[in-house]
Image 1: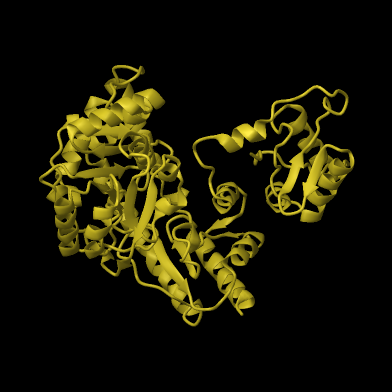
Image 2: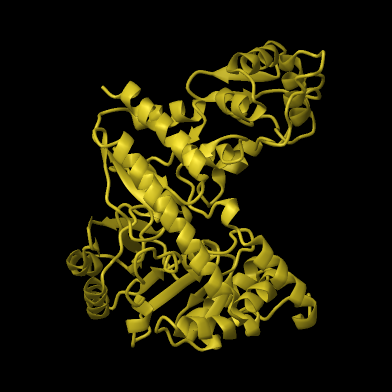
Length: 483
């Protein structure tokens, strides 16, 4: 909602509060913030504008005095007039009622704050689940793109399931992990997140239940709930989801499916061993429970390769397997895939055509070129080497600064350490004070309302220097806030 590219000019003779007031007024007058709009929190604006909060308060107070904004205790500040409605009684659309009546639920407030804060210059992102920009393979990508003019036959739309040469490459790539899938059983999607969106719309019945680990990344999203699906969390142990809890729940749940991240789970980092995977698959086969296997972290192993995917052991077409290049190559190119029975893939492909008419042709051709030679395996080795270094350094920093205030397990891959705080404190206050201190945190409550004492700590995004600075600040902050 807020334009992070605009900043007040600190060299100007015009006071900063006046510049901010004019910026807010222009948003209102241009119709970007219509009457009824709740403007961003003053703290968030101060962070984006890189000014003291008192400067924003002064600007907002003047607009309230002018009758353009109205502050309501407990519900924020809203636009109540613009320059036109101050002069004429003509009615304007009540956009707020439209926004609130949409089928898809909005992100939680904290998620929206995280999404905004990720683009604040200088913010140390201690929870971000993606590769550091320093690990993006710019030179390799340049080589891939340079080859495309000789490979690409069209810049038009691709067929519903995606570019055939890419699906052929993915079919060959999947076979190295034991998954035998023909191109006709593969759908190209704009990241695994879109795959989940398509599944929630195309396969899940309103009123049905999705079983999943608790905590889980999926609890931080609203796609299944917006489709009328209930999320039912299952407990985990150090070996992953507890499969013996599934039969009774599956029996009672209408049209149930199971969602799982068996390799380097988000947010806990847990790796499910092979015998638990077999047990899980057997239980689901007996219960005739379809499985969504989210395997986007698979290639990010640091100690040894993970066990075969569930899909590699699936002989009955029970498993939908999700993969992606976003975690290992480039999140911005938006290339992922779904593997499953052809009838299911046909259904999801039809739905994808109705929503975006196919993923970017350019990105699909680039991914096909990447997977056609030896570039990708070499890149993965580079990523693993660097990620291993980052994990080990983060563990050293935790050993030196957190032993008396937190506990954790050593992940064998992926991006995350599931940090349990052993001091009592308000996680909301920790999050807010962290923002003020220039560190962005991902509290555990985003992934499970009952995971209040946890943080999802990521060693993948921040530089080693920023990890050291950020963890030093975090340790001091926890000690200051602990009761």
